[in-house]
Image (cartoon, rainbow, N blue to C red; front, side, top):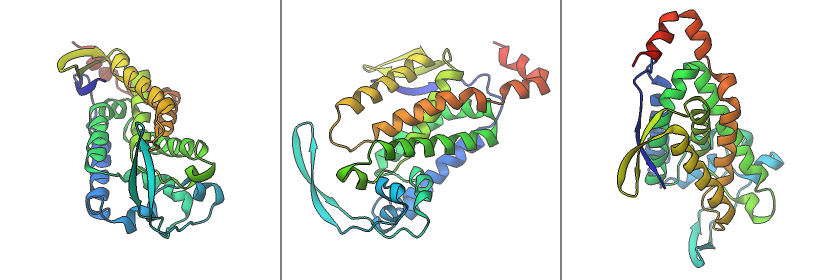
Length: 256
């Protein structure tokens, strides 16, 4: 698995204010509203649940101990139960993409957003990038709902910005396939094209989704968000219009 460290920002023309604002919003929700992950009353009220989206009604469950199988081993974990949702349940498709399950979950997502989000924001402009991020996050959430409609899976909560950030990665693959990305691979720092860094990540998501049976990671949402990002990337990009309005912008992008 490759881990990105940085990418080439030499031709970026816009300050990534939306990417920074999204990172701040995610950190605020996790630290303040979720109490660093300890506030189950908030988290389990605003989390996305397939059965709620399908039925359109709020579902409340009691805390319980359940068994989870991870790599052939069975573990007992505490399920805090679903809490009453004070907003229309379909709005949890949005609220869930600003929450995280752990510090590492948050840090990993925000790091990928910081590395890849700024150049996608530069392509789309602040407004379109905001709409793109939210749209791919919701689409990823809906994919998770569609793939978890039956049985106990329908009551499996999902949260995290991974689906929306997967959309950002999909757009990066389309808009910046040749941009150099510095990655750590087998303890070695190397530069690779964007399509290699992002492509390996996507392949990992697909393979993991096929073979992972624990249900701990919403791989279907990752894949759904990524594909949505690829499809929406060029229609949402405002770079051609901005370059036409400012001829110097195109020149600056092409300077070494």
